[in-house]
Image 1: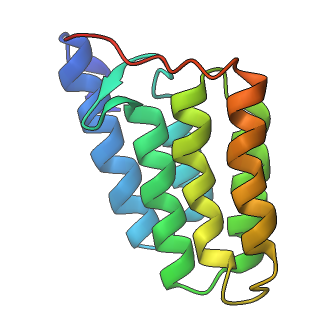
Image 2 (image 1 turned 120 degrees about the vertical axis):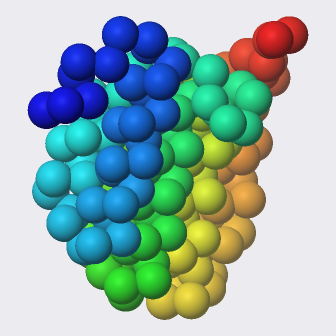
Length: 131
């Protein structure tokens, strides 16, 4: 892959994120997930505390929602939340569930409660840093 030859870590991570997004928009789900999985989870991303990895997952979730591929969206949500290591990323990834709300609106209350659970689990501390 040509992206692997990019020396600057930030540029390489951004290129991987862009590639993952393009693959998701093209509905190449497996390949998009594979590319996104190669993005480092601890790198600072375009949204401050959210990593490039988290943002790429959110964009893939939006593409899955637009394609009405709800089963794969649910699988992405579950696997992503199982691997999360920070409060900020957990909260950001909960937005993947938004695409599922029209199918089962009553999960909205559970989603709201999950925000409290994330705060409790991570001790109410976020991982925002000064840049």
